[in-house]
Image 1 (cartoon, rainbow, N blue to C red):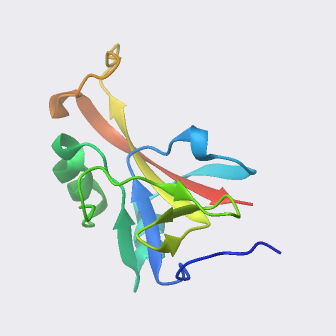
Image 2 (cartoon, one colour):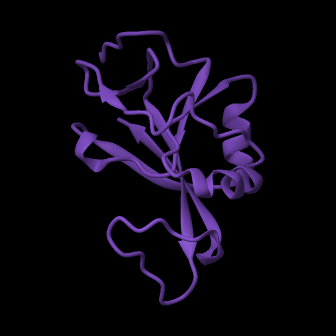
Length: 130
């Protein structure tokens, strides 16, 4: 049985634009999801966001119909002793990721801030710790 420390996450979901793979310390399952599935998961819950790119926040919010504004600028995820992601005192066993789909033949340079015009769509992924 997995122990969690912090407030239970049955009242909030974790959302970001990318999840740092350096924080994956136990098996995870990642599956594509739809906007309807994301909105269903959010129903009646708070959104805890670790969105890191201010220039893509508005288009991502428009795409999914949710507020993705983080509490502070570029919040830092941490792991608890059970190797689960935590943020703002919440412990999560799932993370929703909204990643941009770029126009053909575009690949951002390392550290480049991607112009919104280069984003043609969004991909939703649900990452679940097993």
